[in-house]
Image (tube, rainbow, N blue to C red; front, top):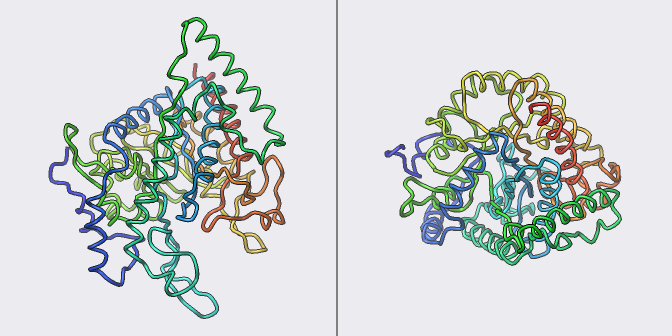
Length: 451
């Protein structure tokens, strides 16, 4: 354990993607308030997740991580949160049924309010303003007032995260995730989906299995009435992350108590950077995004820095290569990590490497490319003798048209109909369910080959 590490140690390193606050005193006042607020998660939950991720790396579980590209304060409402949870529960049912494995469910919500940007400034019609960096920093409207970084938003982000987490906990503890009642998870707008029939068959098969086991046991099995559910967000805004990092009784070390699973994005993954310095010292399991330009000589030192004890469950490598690049970029990394005996969980993000802009100005992703990257990932891992143990997806339970293709074969014209994201395009319900079914076909097939 690193006894000399403190949550403020990141300040000694170069910190990318941080906003410039015009009033330093205001920032410090907001951070002081933030340090006094109650935590959103517990150290026990964090350590439980770490064990689950270690088991996923061994092939005993499968990680499903999904949610919004960036949450907004305006969408912290019961319908949006419930629909997002419904999609993740339906996907996990497909995975549990098809893979015959427990699923580790991690939501990209209850804190995903910060987003990295390619430039500090955005220009429109000759006017230059700070880029929108997520609701935790500023607002998306293109005005000087909206784009000014506001420290009060740190407190609002914590409050909205708490409300989201509280509602998710209440739903799950109240039986929303009960396998006896999967009808709770129905999304009304997809009742005529071409995938609904396949999904219904899976639900019926699981229901029959549950009833059979309960008949043998002679009682209702409580393990089928609720599920473990964890939260995650990109650990981007380091002033915020420092303020929510605490020590607790009985469990040694420092814990980020705003989320179970923080991750480092590709733009902030430098070995000598502030984000790596922060994430190496916390007891939370940590994710690291890995892009197509990363070499083994670059990746291995970062792995050692983030997980110096080679602790199982501590580090998840989330590769996001793009369908056109994964075939050449991923194999050397898999070979090097396996050869050096590094304890990591490999997870695929087939979203971020496949982003493009259409002629009519929409930022989108083609479902065929998303599916292709995930398809290739399973094959590449099998050929390398490694295991793909999870998927990281941007998705929503809303009736959006942001990614082209999928069950309804959405086109460029469809994007104009229901494009709601302020940052990145997300999979809708049908596309998400298709991905879950693809994982079952690929992971299930490769598991039988391993056996």
